[in-house]
Image (cartoon, rainbow, N blue to C red; front, side, top):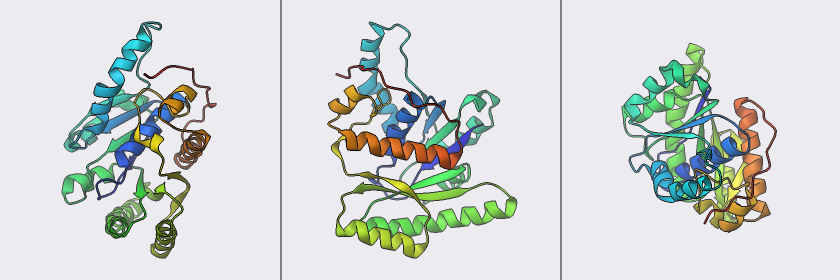
Length: 250
């Protein structure tokens, strides 16, 4: 089995499902990683994105390329089935398994799912309620890491700053994260319209889809930098960045 990660927090609206979509697609399309996403969120946002937004685009692609297919696998899954998936030898083919979990941390199922991860990335949104929620969630992750360290099991967690706008709130968040001692990624994502149009088929490093999503060079640079830092942190297989085909997404 490859690395198992989650973009997780206990507060809804932090962008964890959006992060999962954006990064899964770029890592699969542009970095050629074999990825499985386990959509364990009750809202099934990732499954719905594929069905309601990307299915028609895939059919359009197949008119000119019958072999066209989705770049990675998505599985709707109950949290109680996560370990069955991980323990199945047939799933050893994946470089990276990403768990999309509900935006809460008030039950044993969530706790158990987090223990399945090698790394948890915590989205950091710079407002007071998110800061307080992050502190609570940190306590859960710290307890998991304490047990993992005693058992000699690899487990780590990192903050990932999102929706940044260079406001005072961002500076206060930075100070707060330093104060509580949360390790975080150097990369971050701004508050950009293009991130509200994630796809399970088209990467934001694809110039045609980037234009469709209303993005610019800054968006592609942020995504590329974040993908490469995650690859380095997780020690994932390194593939040469490919140049996306100019496929339409209309």
